[in-house]
Length: 165
Image (cartoon, helix red, strand yellow):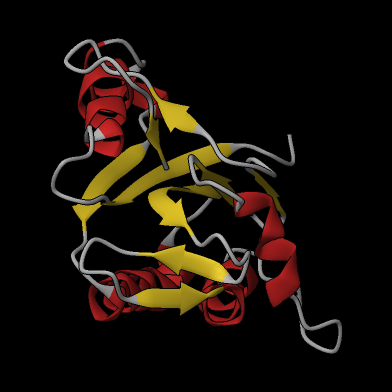
């Protein structure tokens, strides 16, 4: 199968008052499913990163860029980060921003090293605009991605209104 996933990476950068949806997804679903349900012979690697700013996000993605040549099988990178209203990229916990072009360049290293087996998922407002970071003269930064084309929200039992992400 082309989409055979062996590694899952969750990266979260949400504001202090936000529901920590990336951490919840990782701890309650991904980690539990892999560690306690998945058969030993097909165990996936998994990791969670809570990043504060653009520099930390870049460092995490560079780490996977360096190590991706040793990662056999497909890689999913899931982002739980706010999207910019101007459709130009993401805004991180400390209000620093990162453009789709910079993200695409960082993803490209991982995708090339994994032989076009990087899949990006984003619980991100306007994440669909990641395509704006593509340079048609360069290799593809991912095999595929999925995200919203508009504002998305996370509903919490602790509050009465949705939180845009």
